[in-house]
Image 1: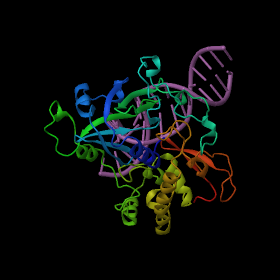
Image 2: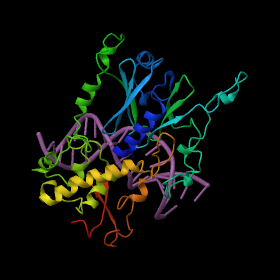
Image 3: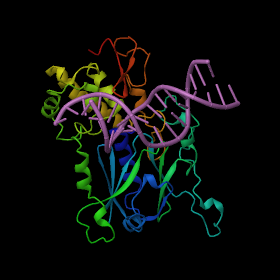
Image 4: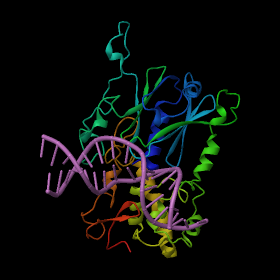
Length: 326
DNA sequence: CGTTGATCCTGGGCGC
DNA sequence: TGCGCCCAGGATCAAC
């Protein structure tokens, strides 16, 4: 479930592994995940250099040298895995091994740093490409980028960046990055300068919605998902079922700070891995060991010892301590 | 407008 | 062993 810290971890990984490389091929196995016109995809990507990697909320923005941007959303189970060219095949290599059949997590999954429990032999931990690999982008130096998604909710799409109207065919059908982001009406980045305590308090005013539900609203704050919403509420000792407008000043201050602290820790730890989330090297994040409530139903609260509860709020499950979250 | 709920999708886990 | 059922959840869209 890639949320802000997971997507930021992937962004940093891509920055270190594919920036400066030139796209050689784009293999789309499942159109639904990258539905743009094939000619536009080739025009935008083939032969182009990766210039930079940005992130807005849970969205990755891969900037190309020709003023196209490849936007990627991982939704719940998407992965972007980079395999460096390890098989520098010599002359006679018309062999089948020209196919990229590489284990992308070379350690047994249970031995990967930060991994706690889980499922050692899932399909999406097999060598690449596998049945959940839907798009493969290769680079001229032999590096390959695999877009895997078990649930097929994730997607890629091309956006125009800057004023690249000179790029021909069907450009008018492609939105600009600005148009696309405007359409999403995302709220401020919680770790950015626009997310002020005033913005946060004003946003809670007159909102009858439950505070947990509001934290998940991307138009209020962009990038929080179920894990970090639960963790922030625990850190601030606020029950997820409180109405947003019921928080006292001291509580909204604590929650405001808790949101930043848990997201920053999540980034420091390289994200949270339960099942499918991996960084670009295919390694799980280490944040799971730091979670205080998410995924800890029935286990003792680390603050007061009472049992952590799980309750449906909206369509999501909320994890919280019934005693020390008020 | 604010809010709620259904929907997309697939594999894992559970009860019987 | 296998079947049916429920669950995970980010974002979108329809409906109240």
